[in-house]
Amino acid sequence: MPAKKAVAKKAVAKKVSTPEVLVIGPADPKDMSFRLYVDMMVEYGIYLEADDQDRFPTRLPRKLTGYKAIIIDKALPAAQEIEKHPDWPKVKDRYRPYVKPKEFAWSDQRPYWVGVHHLLMVSEVTPQHPAVLARLGGRRDRDVVMGQVKNCWTDKDHAMWLRWGNDVSFVWLDGMYRAGEVFGDAQVKKNVVSAAHDILDLFEQDRLPSSKGPNRRLHCWEFLLTLWEKTGRRDRRLYQAAITQVPTLAAARKRAAEAYKGAPYFRAEHVGHAWTYAVVADVLKQPAFFEAGVDYLKGAFDALFDRHKSLWAHYGRKGVSLGLPWGRGQAWCLYGLVELLCRLPKSHPDYELLASWVDMTCEGMRRTQDPVTGLWHTVMGEPATRIEVSSAGMLLRLLSRAWRHGCCRAEFVPEMLAAAWRGLKAHTFQNRTCTFCWGTGEGYDAAFYANVPCGGSPSMSFVGGASYVKAFGPLA
Image (tube, rainbow, N blue to C red; front, side):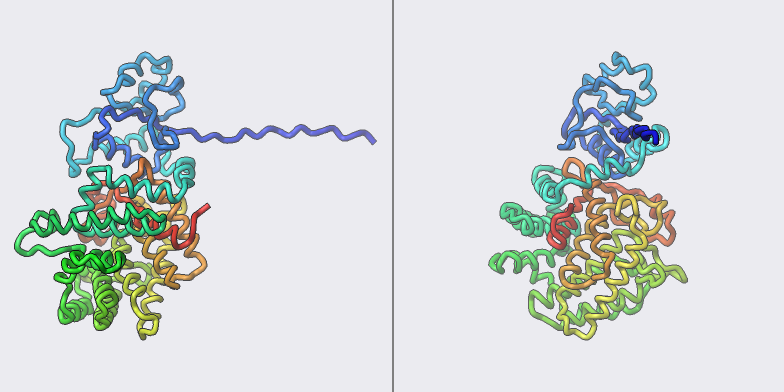
């Protein structure tokens, strides 16, 4: 019988993924416009040429034809050299020169949106590129979380936000303190306490940007109270500042009664009041506030929870229309629900009811999670709206807290959160998790949220990251 001929295996070429956009710049390291442009590209998951430290090249590479677009700050020598490059005739239509504007304003971001739109639609750059998502999403948790935390103290723009004393302040500072706890960094915790005192300095001088004038109030007093508790109850200034802002029990009960009315324009951001009552009840040992918090949540649930979508609406009913499940609004609702649940005694007769609402919300999140990025859209379940990162950071943090507490134990929850955490890391670049989404007004159709002007300093979603690592351990 003749010997069988050896069959040569056909070599299968490994598909190589390379960066699609070359960026060289900025000429001025403090150029906010350039940074904003880059952050928008990161938000859209564009694969940029950069090294492991997220640094852009400073010189033209030998070959340019592999890039779909080339962006160079015109103030750099590379901008003058590109026309002399051997590949220039082949790539001149791909060149997108960047020119620093004379003035910078957060409110006018049209040039950057146009630039990103041009990359996607004309240059045919791949949005949410799988290779860049995998590369950035695979980085060490500690590097991503602590890199962002420490960046806050050196980045003047972020440092300013830390001292505004508004919701951004307490979310970021609370996340920082938790990061310091998780990774054993005492200096980070000291920095948070210092920033809290800076807020009080501005408040006492009536210079706090978010709260000035005769009707001023301290927006982040609940955080100051929890910080006082975390630091051993020794800082009397934190305690005294917070205690002056605590509502009366009568006022808490009145607000809870109003929530039951389910009036139009009752909004998701209001649900955080349940957290307020939980902090007072637990830290100040006034259990009657628990009842006000539970009653308030019951009213909020009736007004905002969409049982068909299993998600919380941004706004209550206007006629027959219920608001849509805005991503950040989802997070604010869970802020009130989870924080109250985690402080409420498990023997409370309504404990299981509140826990079931967390489970229901998780189911709605499972249905609407983006399969590519692991994140959620600005309007959850509406792919026509943008992927939104800051809401995912808050949702991660809160559901991780609930998990540690023993709630939301459905089998799909760990992988759902793991995918979201990878997504957050994949949209983190140069120590900034990049997203653009201010608070926004009422909307009863997805087009409103798809077209609403968004912008502002990139959100630092480590507020979810630090707690996530503590909940489930380091990720593979």
